[in-house]
Image 1 (cartoon, rainbow, N blue to C red):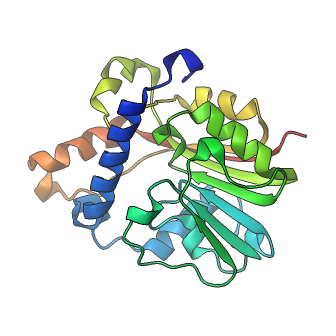
Image 2: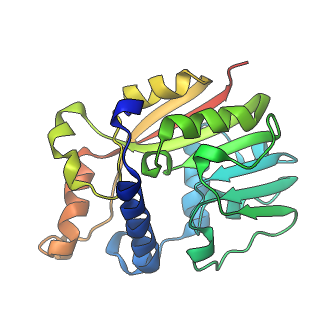
Length: 233
């Protein structure tokens, strides 16, 4: 579990940001993501949190670390949609938000939003890419109103895999499902928690292709942990 003593340095974080940009510049060419049906994908992911699209209706919704195709782009009935990502200006934005919106290039560790101003916060597959996940969680808790909802997802790993974490350059932090839940519960009240095995669709004919080996390996050890939580006030 990350702590202040093991926080990555700025050079490492900048390297992670470069890897993020590289991934998003070519992600549709990677086998597991080719022809991905994004609306269907997000319908299934929302259900993993044990909720429905109705939960977003009429709310001020924030997506922290949204990326270029994040959940925020598919929410139709929010009162306002706010997307925040430090790489927002560099992304090829093919999915502009419709209706009341705010797009901000900023880091999660210092959100330029007023305290208790957000009804629902999303941080999906982003926390373990950040410079300081603990500070980011503090900021999300700060801007979320009392009684508000937070949706978190990150990829989690079995503890025995720790000696190999150095090979995963794009994720500077790694959590077990239990450590992730413990970290979230220090700021939020967990309402729903679910961990599912991460699956990458690699056809058998591609199993001998070296570029696909990492997806086959990840499918044996990687999971996605979903947490729906409320403000701890």
